[in-house]
Length: 323
Ligand code: EPU
Image (cartoon, rainbow, N blue to C red; front, side, top):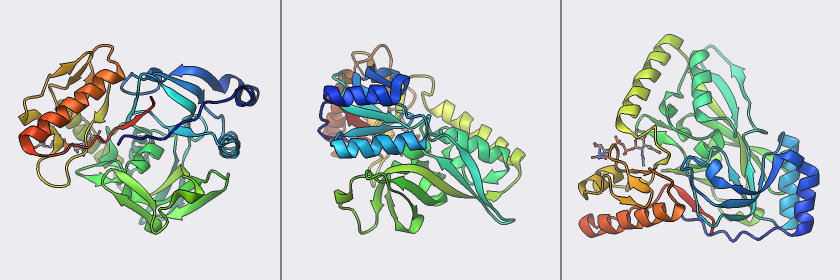
């Protein structure tokens, strides 16, 4: 997905307010290459890590009042920031929304809430330790709870939408609320938000927390299953190289993207420091000091070749932002 949100630059008064309110928690001209799994990306005009939820609410409300645009980032694992960077604010939720807790315990099922800045892998480990079944599908998927819900992260063995019972959101006005799963509209690799309320005239909310229903099970069995799944993933995917996971969505029907790219003979194809992984063709890896421009050029080359050979339009699953 190529996001073309026009980010407005921050005026001096706004920068001063951010400095006085967030001190060391705000950094100006912060290279996004330090905050994305691709390890590429130009500077964010202001990069803020709110300390707690109150901080976050104040920042969101202020941005809304000042008409400043912001990009929310979790783990930066599905994000490609262009080399020119990002105007406006980048808000990281890792520090302010970092808890996991059990919200209801019954003999038949247990509900667990995880805040948006928690890593998916941390929720998987928490579930295994507590002997709770249902999260193993997410093992090895990079990213945070917030990003995972927004992307409806999943594999052939399960999706976020299967285990989620509710999300807590923060509206740009500063109001928080909980929305039940039945009101959320998920599809492949995306959350389309509230059913019947797709107009964003209220402003796009931020997910602050997800609640999941899990089932009592034996921790040792879950751990063994987890180790086997991770072993397969490491064997099939280039987990040691900087990347954004699978780059393209699988087409709605027909062959998966990885297979099409592979059959087009593109494994190992490189542009500058970026290359198609020789292990799994749907991974673009940052082989050596790639620029975002290298990755974007390689993306276009892959799309063009696959279109020519198979008449299939590949759509990126990675979000491309910046200028
Ligand atoms: N294939 C090839 N060549 C390749 C890669 C794959 O021929 O280089 C073939 C495989 O042999 C297989 C088919 O393509 O027959 C599908 O491959 P795979 O089982 O690896 O699954 P995928 O559809 O490529 C999806 C998710 C992954 C997830 C895996 C495992 C998407 C876009 N990708 O990959 O998610 O890890 O299933 O469940 O839906 C991610 O989101 O970042 C991601 C990697």
